[in-house]
Length: 224
Image (cartoon, rainbow, N blue to C red; front, side, top):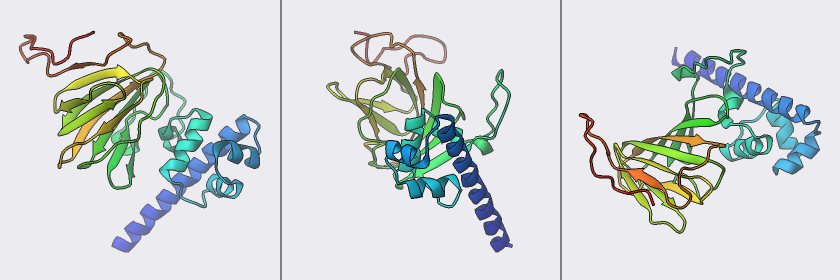
């Protein structure tokens, strides 16, 4: 029984990656690129890209990130079901894509399409780094659900956020997330693209600014 279930899961996984390959091929053809042209621009070999488009290989997260960056796609878009609805986007939990990376962190994409709003559930394992310093347009909002997450922004003092804390910062400043503790941490992170940050210099963070009664508590960091 367990063997048949495992085979079914393996078959479903192969089908998923076949669909991923088909979507990548559609994007490539939409831009009028040959395999060689696309592979060279992305930084992959033409043979690997061909295998990927035909669902013959399981790509690494790094390879998918390169492809999505080149075609300006959200990585979750590659795994989503085709849907013609544009007014309401329902994304059930079983359809949400969760990716574990190097055993130190996992990302769960809560919306399938790349757009102005990009919510991600981030889990950081003990003493791990989400990614190296990165920059992109817009701003990021974070809310720590469990444990502690330290937001490191170059040329700024790091902000250590505990469960219940929230933070908003410019994404065009080099930034990364770190779990400085010996326990797993989890947070909801939302990227806002094409949206200007309300302050130009310093990140804004609040440490449980309001109580349940609505009484304002002391802010840990004030707007500059």
